[in-house]
Length: 106
Image (cartoon, rainbow, N blue to C red; front, side, top):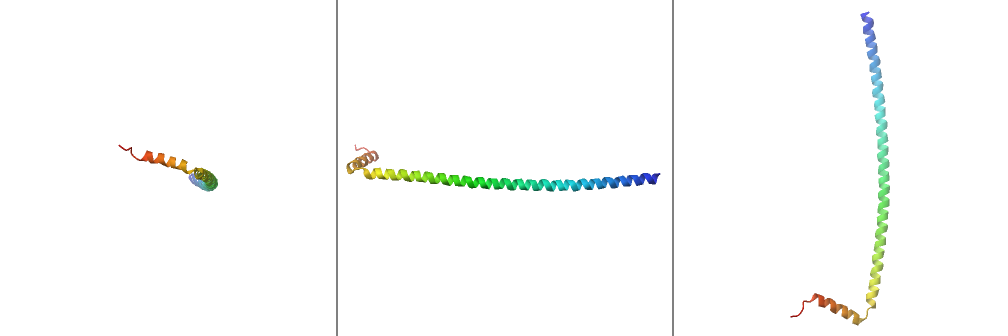
């Protein structure tokens, strides 16, 4: 009877070890699946960030071009107006600026 009990205990231990190994295998497989899924999610997030960065850079470049064109147009208009001033008007403007720079005479 003792031998039968010992045999049963040994058999039960073998079944437990088998189940434990199966659970370890399943856990390892699940870890691998979760890791692969996480890697795919990271790759997708990186791709979305790169696409967003590309759009943001394009938008910034377009905005900078628009601002540069606006500054250029304003400069051209200012230049046109300055060239349109007659000599007397220019002399008056220069005289006012010189007067504001020079100290008053005692």
